[in-house]
Length: 575
Image 1 (tube, rainbow, N blue to C red):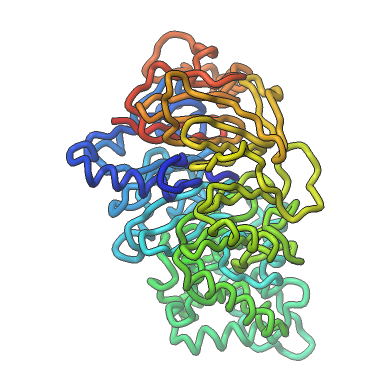
Image 2 (tube, helix red, strand yellow; image 1 turned 60 degrees about the vertical axis):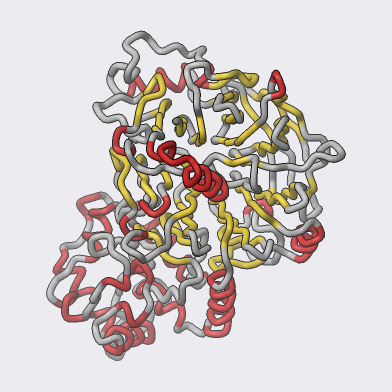
């Protein structure tokens, strides 16, 4: 849903990636300081996003994430129900709700404790600089500027250049699976035989029902012949076809490895391998990628898409692959995962978008969906270039934003309750002379800071979920000016909460992180389990760490270096 990692206000950063880079530089100059950091979590824990086991649905006070102790953590990120930590050469660590494979571990299951994303380890990717967790997908950027993606891809938000026919087939397949009771699935032997029938030449007068998009309406013998030919010509190896993360089949199809590590042979399927059982076993559907695939790393000729590619869409597929290769040849400096779309900024100052274009979130053009990354439309691109190019991006529920080298902020899509403007974008009208140094996006609001004050546009809530304020881009609202001349080091936004890290290590928080009504609902569903970890007393719902109508300092915390806000939980990195 959101690029929920904390954002630095120094050195040009609006998303999680430059924040991690700034912390890495500080760690390099700080000696032992880099080895003494701790990650604390609190809030909703029903999906284990706070990494506290034992059936606790709520973590009522900042509690250490023990598995990260001793790791050189550089930055944090949070999705609605998931969490992540970036540790440079030690990789990315994710935990919590793994719906659609968004945690990168090859399945859609919950992960109770931080686990390294192994698909990005072992030299496959350079040391990681940052991660952005969206509603059900994740983006990773490594030190070489390569962009990686995993999770839900049926809206094109992974940027893997699936043809639209393939995306449609994946939607149909997912819908069909959702209608079947658990016991209605066929056996592994029956599915293997069905797949072989689908791959064989079609007998006259007979229409075999194949698997996925190969057997849907219009899936005739041509698709099956192409599948058989592709498998045989590859010599039984998916690596020669360039199928990243067994694309279209759910990423970690054979135990979580990438397609380049697999040997997929027709003989193996004929021996009775139950591909559908594996998908069900790891909780993935077609179009969901359980391990990260390189965006712009080559053709995404997924198994389920071979029929679509062969159906007369060669020119459009070639164009899509050209766009994909375009971003693959760029150095990505920042990326943000929105609800159904993604945004990336390159070292050239360009902004690329892909996914679903609801409310204009992709920044112009005539496409409702883009599965291949594409530069934003000319009016936005020209405005960015006039201000020195984009240096950071942010993505909310239905809007995106870019911060420029000159310190201006451009917003497009639908931000807050107001209807989408007819203009292709809006320039946030901050006071004269203000240069924005950091920004962060929530579901319906955007935070900006110049290092001394914090402004917001969009719509934001109080602790109980009622509207606390609203502002449009032409009249942003100033929400915080720190007392005593203290400076803002970072800003962060959750779904409906906001936070600031000060340059002296303090933490300020407001909005709706976790309220009493939501908390009691979690406790009831958990059967009245104890509410807190590390605090035996009843939950104090007035605590500043749960939010409020106005910014308040969280007195229990000090020496804070980074913060990330999820849907109903928070993470902090402290010395």
